[in-house]
Amino acid sequence: MPMTCPTPIAPFVQRACTLPAMPEVAHKLLKSFDRDDLPLPEIAGLIGRDQALAAKVLRLANSSRYSPSHTVISLNDASATLGMRTLRDLTLSASMVGAFPAMQGFDRLGFWRGTLAVAAYAQPIARALDLDEDMAYLGGLMLRTGQLLMWMVDPDRAQQAARQSAELDSRIGFETVHFGVAHPDVTAELARHWHFPTVLVDAFRASTQPMEARPFSRLAAVLRLASVVADCRESGRSVTEGVLATHGDLVARLGLDLGWLEQHLPVHDLAVSGVDLLMH
Image 1: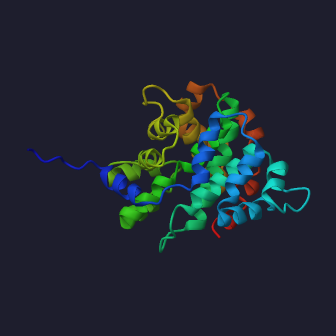
Image 2: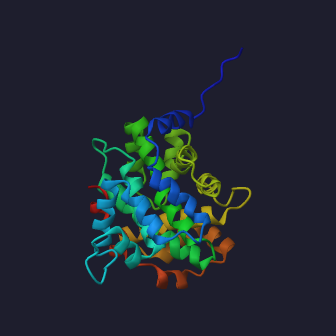
Image 3: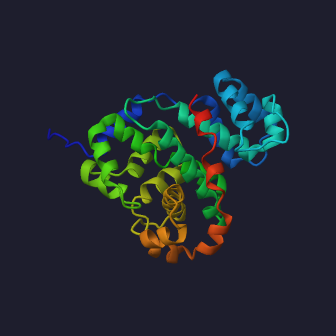
């Protein structure tokens, strides 16, 4: 019997399988994307089953990111104050961060800061294109997690790709050179392992080369553009200039109004606030 040659993605599939399963509450919240009738007390009850997660959610609910009008003292209070969408997004963010171990030499704070930004910017881009903002937020929250698996599998090559990626939106290309795959492809495998919605798994794969993906995925385009916007905002670069320089063809394909988008992006400091609370 001929031996099967390992594919570039194989080490990351194996590493993904060693990660713990997502918390039960996260899985149930993922299923809630298909439900408009999920009662807020039911969500609060799900979160309350995990005491560590519940404590983190309450800390975040009282942070400047959400600016509550009063001190939020319980999960039921959080659900009433924030609403289902915000509470779900907040809880999924906390669950995602808690699923990955700290790694020596890895800038964990910087990574999750960028990840929160991608998620925050994916929402208004999705809104401009009449796509599901909740799904876009979850996709933005997950998009870069493949970089974590790359670091776990081969930190030297992952560092080299990161160092070479000084130019805007160039990391995917350098990862492909060093690993044979890019982080959105790795993220897709992790998302499949964690039983994420198929539409997101497909969007992660397509976001590596969104213009070449068949069928064309508007959600993949949203995620790739959100990543560029996050890097522009973090570096102080013009979003319009940065997006047109890297993905002008994609903007044209989508018919995206960048002037409208610039006006509807959240304040960057608020988009990334609370990241320190997520990690403790």
